Length: 300
Image 1 (cartoon, rainbow, N blue to C red):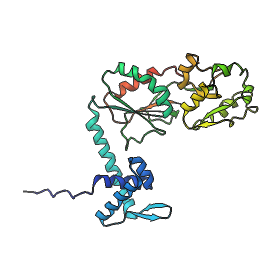
Image 2: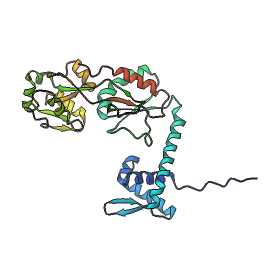
Image 3: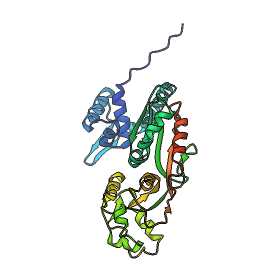
Image 4: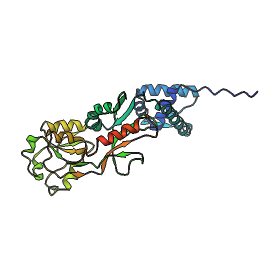
């Protein structure tokens, strides 16, 4: 009777995860950030793995670490193994409608666009549990569980399965009180320009489309790491913000903000829904509902 030999004992899974992340990132600190632990915990896990294997995996350098040749050769196989494990876990849990549907979005989209739609989403999908994570970059679906991601992407940068919204546009916006003294584009030279740190070039792009591009300094004014904070400054009358119409239509519709200088300038990027290869059984329905709810958001 043939006997199947037992599988070899594997090191602890957490130690393997720590090694794979550190090797892929070539940094213990970045691996710790990805795994949600401390750099010291990653260091300890890797030391335990090296002790179990009886081999060194990293060369400690004055500035960071470097993989040994054996570790570099093993990394692609281990990464594929974790990708397959993550895919299998999604298949096991993805078929259950009772599980939480996860959405990742750019912080400004999560705060200004998605959050106001959550009540309507709950009414459209009773009983569906939704979790929202604000992220600066689209998630790596091989390492992070995500059913839907919502980010701004340039045309042609998204996968064929992505759902793009209508083209976006930008135009200066401000409080009604400030707008009362802002009669021309040239008048911006006497006002505070509010900038989002990521979209800081929007002011230069918009001014270049006007006849006052050489009169107004597009770099002048404070910069904010969160668009919502720059928006709060504009609402309080602290300055003029280059407004993304896909995010600010509700504020323009109810008069909290005014766009006194039009016309709006179409941007090369637009809000886009990204759908990983596998996910929650209702994610396509939810994505379609979100896309319909956002139609016309950049029109003036």
